[in-house]
Each structure stands twice: as structure tokens, then as C-alpha cells.
Length: 380
Image 1 (cartoon, rainbow, N blue to C red):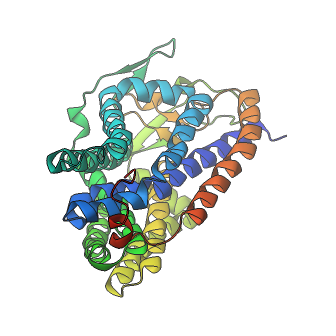
Image 2 (cartoon, one colour):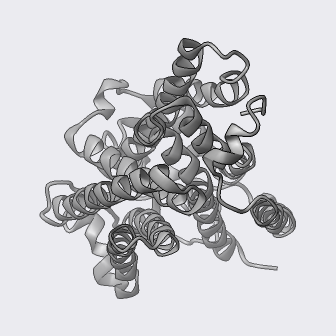
Image 3 (cartoon, one colour):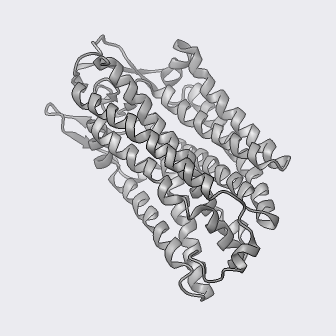
């Protein structure tokens, strides 16, 4: 069996894989729903868009649920500090996500245009809000969150919801909006035809530029030293169950960019992000939807890995008390818990991946206006 340090590193990788899995799968249906009023100009066209994502969205969200469960079991201190301190932000995301199942199931129950347009806008907002807030959350991790632990390891959050909407946090939100919107647009390029695919192609070109400008801009902002990163300055034994307050943490630059100097291989992550954005842009310009979708997927992987590598080994930095910052070494559960969970993950993660791929294979193909028009009483 793995030693404690190895289990900590494995679970850092696994949580990252689950988040990337969520962004790759649920990301395209969030992006497509956000584009619904733009690429669908009438009820028939919007039904085409909805039918490309409605069969998959609930299965895609399994990745988010699994990631939340893994966070609760593997990093309980992160879970408690994040879900108490970021309560209102997460509540906003939760209520936005509530709109999606209701909207998909109820929009076509009535023929009334006002009823359907209302649900279409609800689906759009229900996709835009999570896409924005997820990016703002990652931006605030790089800024540090204003929380601290007392001697009993009870966390206290000293910020507010509006503090999250800082300039850098909003820039990170634009990265997320551009990235997920691009993923949704390239998905629609593959799954639709005619004017819907053409509008999606144009949207993909604009969103690829937005993503590239925001992503590179955020990197320049960090590289210029406007945000002070954290460094562990004391020694510790990673094979022990550590007290988060036992370490010494210093703030200073190069801060979050330091890992790219210490571990040059990590620099491949931002390169993949930029190349993915350029590949998606070329796919849109050259009318190659599969190339565009591959590029948007690489952009997601590169972006999330860039943030994770920059923070390593921190998972939830504190701007108020750097010593309270949580790392993958001192925010984890016991060795036995991590070991049991690893066995469960080895069984269930491949099952999730397997049935997800099977669902896509069985329901693959372009959705056309002719198909939808021939079935006016369909579910969506």
C-alpha cells in the first residue's frame, strides 16, 4: 500500500481529475445553454440546441457530485472552510443549477411562446452564473481567502460575497466564461447544422479570442507580481498527520509563479491552455468542428492545471493569516480513510467514465431542425 505522503499526492491529482472531468463534460452543456438565446433565434432552433445537451447534462453533473464527495472525505478542512466561508457564493451557484432540470423538463410543456422564452432565459442565466462564479472562485484562491483557524482548528471567515468580485476575480471569471462558452460553441458546431452551426462557429471565434486575452492577461497579472503568492518556509514530515497551524508560511513574489521555476515541466500547462485556445480558434475559422472541440478541451485542461500547479502544494490559501493556509499535506483525512477511498475511486471513476462514453456513443449524431419539427410533442 502507498505511504501517507504518496496518498496525499494521489488525492491531490484525483481531485484535480474530477474537476477537469466536470469541466470537460458539464462545461459544454453550460456553454451551450449560455449561448441558447444567441444561436437559437426561434423556438424550433432553441429546441435543437436543447436536444444536443438535455440527454447528457444530468450524467455530466455526476463529476461535480463526485468531486464534492471526494473533497468532503479527502480534504475535510478545505470542505468546512470553503462551504462556510463561501456560503453565499455557493448558494448562488446551487440555485442557478436548480433552474436547469426544471427548465429542461418544463419549457416544452406549454406551447405559449412567453412560457418557453421565459424558461429559455432561465436556462441561459442558470448556465452563465455558475460559469462565472467558478472562475471567480479560482481567482480568489490565487488572491487568498480571508479566513483563519483558532487553536481548536475552528475556521472563521472574515470576508463577504462582494469582496470576491475584485478585479482579478472578475478577470478569472471572464477566463471561465470564455473557456466554457467556447467549449459549448464547438460542441454545437459538431452536433447541429445549418444556421445554428454557423452562428455557433462565429460565437466560437469570438469566445476563443476572449478566452485567450483573459487567460494571458491573468498570467501577466500574476507574473508582474501584483499578487503575492505563498511559500512554506518551515520543514515538515509529509508522512505525518500535520496540524495546519504548525507550519510557517511566508508571502512574497515570485509567489505563485515560483513553481514554474522549481518544476519547469509544469510550464507545459499554460502552454497547453494557449495552444488549445488557438486550436479552437482555427477550428472555428476553418469550419472544422472536431478540431475546435479538441482545442476547447485542451484549453480547459491547460487552464485548470495552470491554476493547480501555481498553487501547489496549497489548496486553500489564506490572505488573513498565511499560517492558516491549507495544503494538500495538512488538510487531509487519515491514511486509512485515503486508502479506502482510493480503492473506491479505482472502482467507481472508471465506471463513471465508461457509462459516460457509452451514453455519448449511443446518442451521437447531429440534431437537425427537420428532426425536431417532425416531433413537435417531444420531451424537449
